[in-house]
Image 1: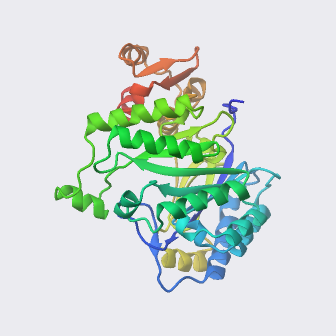
Image 2: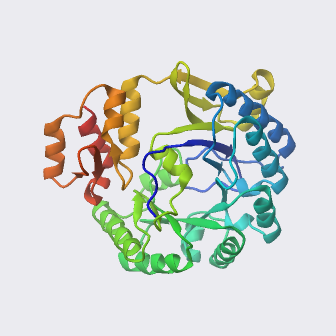
Length: 386
């Protein structure tokens, strides 16, 4: 059954910023604390910030909850349960909504997974990243192939829904090697896979190695071929791309991520979390302090760790809706775009991009990128939004 394209929903994102080690390609807000952290102190701070977000959002019915990071699977099940209770105390949380927790295979154990399930988590998303030991080591992962396979099997056994991530376009990776790895991944997957091209982000160790010529990644032509092979193989196995990097059996799409891409509202809670909330004064953007200890202090003093809270102009909202919606296979709702922007997209720009195979029209009020357009998505959006 295809997802409902008309309801973006209201999502709650909870950022646990701690990792056992920092991966060399990662530019997420993650921090290593070898002495461990006092989880109860953070539980209390999450509870306070949840209440601050509730004051901004007003009463809402939550459609999904997502524990991201960092490595949320470093949390105890008791911590997860306490934070979920705080969310339930702030907003209406219907039974059975999607509640996802990100996990790393190296921090997985059966008792902990069962504890998360008892706390209410019904979907796990695992950062596997590769299915061979050489690339796992190169990517700085703490687990090996055998641990990844055990974690996948365990997740399938305990949780109703499971997804895992892989990174492709890795150094020295060939189309043939990736195709074989992807075929194996699909045989292990339940109903969802997230498949990301390796990007070299400024400020990461990989950036320095790449700049020095010590890390060679596939060129644009090979990267495009790897993307196309990924799309074709997943489509053939019944996991089409419903977003640029996410593949699922129809009906198994990530409800939480669809809220982002459909430009719904979401409360971002925890160090370094971002949010979009509709308030009585209009839609606002929020961002919290990135450094965990500073965030903790600020929550203690002010009741929240927000360092940014500003109104979004309607033009900004329209551009964000376009940028997010064109990532989706279902495309973007043009009537909603017109309602936000107060104007139509320029007909000649649409026609130009259609002629060049970058976008396609779906009836009179929906537009989507073609697979070719997805490769240059930012350029397509920039061309349309002028």
